[in-house]
Image (cartoon, one colour):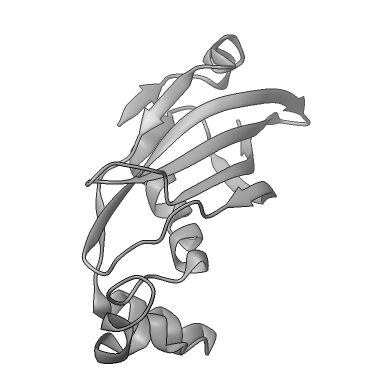
Length: 150
């Protein structure tokens, strides 16, 4: 995890990579739990036998499951010590360029795109590229907007 002492260290890093998260495994149990929580039980996610005959050769994670792992990636990707609180403010562009086969290990790579002052802190626009251990196309690219408060 990359550590920063203060929020003031971030604005000069706009355009640069500021962190890389730990790996997170996406197994069938996680996919099934997400399917139940969201009521999205489509067979390409939850039926391994049928999915083996489908377009991906096996079950794949929901795109929104991959997106929902962003907080976990942030947790291990970088940290600002002086921050007393961070809030998810929203998302801009989100894409899922490649599927996530069951059993994949994912991590997030963070590039700071903007760091704008807000009352009591900074609003950060961070491009998060979620990649698999096997390489190739990213499985998710999202512009995450957070507010970090001193």
